[in-house]
Image 1 (cartoon, helix red, strand yellow):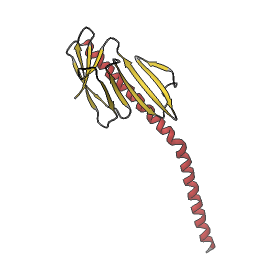
Image 2 (cartoon, one colour):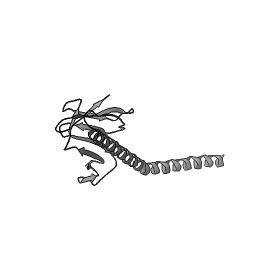
Image 3 (tube, one colour):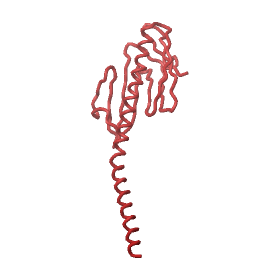
Image 4 (cartoon, one colour):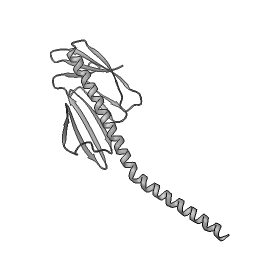
Length: 171
């Protein structure tokens, strides 16, 4: 009888040790996985901004009245069309420090700024258009597109003018 009890005690002890080890591994690995997911999301969002920028320049070069449809997928964060500042931007709060906090960083024509918010980081990516008048829905409106499982259907149109008007609208 005594040997059977000892076997059960050893089994329970080894099982508890295994659970503790799994818990310790997860405690160290999970934050790193979250960080890598945030990095991938930020890089994907910068690529979306590059696509939008490419279409804006294409619409301008092809002349007045030119219109393009672009599918824009935003998984998390916010995509902002700022008519007042003539810019497009993306902001995201997560675990990944994309650039040195508090320092401005340029990547091509995009300005990137990372800000530390407690244990998280806010990454703000912006593309300014000083030679265009950016509008949303034909007026100087600001539009914020938030994370969604389905892509937004974004129209980008060259409306012309002495200062070229580039209009954004959703289908």
